[in-house]
Amino acid sequence: MIKRNIIAGVAALMVATPVLAQKSLYNNPVADTGAGSFAIVNKWADRDDDIWCAAAKAARERGAAWNSRLYVVDVTSAAQSQFGSETISFTFNPTQQQLAQAQSGRSSVRGIGNNLTVNSANRRCVRELDFF
Image (cartoon, rainbow, N blue to C red; front, side, top):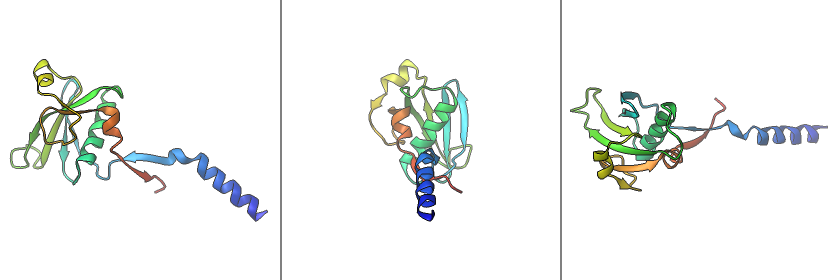
C-alpha cells in the first residue's frame, strides 16, 4: 500500500512538471517607451541572460510573437538614466534606421543593434521549481 502511494505521488509530480516556471532571478522594472518599445531598468541582474529573459517577458506582455525579433536600441548608464540604474531599451517594432544598425545573433545587451528572437531571449530564462 505504501509502495502504491509512493508511485502515485511520483506520477503526480511527473504530471505536474509544468510547475517549472521560467523566471528571471531578478524582477527588474520595465518602463514603456512607445509602441512596441520598452526599457528594462537593470537594478539587480548581473548577467545579460537575465536582461534578455526580462525583455522576452516584457515583449510577450506587449503582444510580440515568439518569432518577433528584439532589438537593443539604447543603453543608458546609471548616471544618465532617469531611473538611477543602467537602462537597456528594446523594440520589437524597429524603424528602418534601427534595422540598418542590426547585428543579428549578438547576445550582448550593451550593443546597439544586437538582437535575438523573443523565443531565443526567452530560452535564456533560468528554470526554477515554482513550489514556494
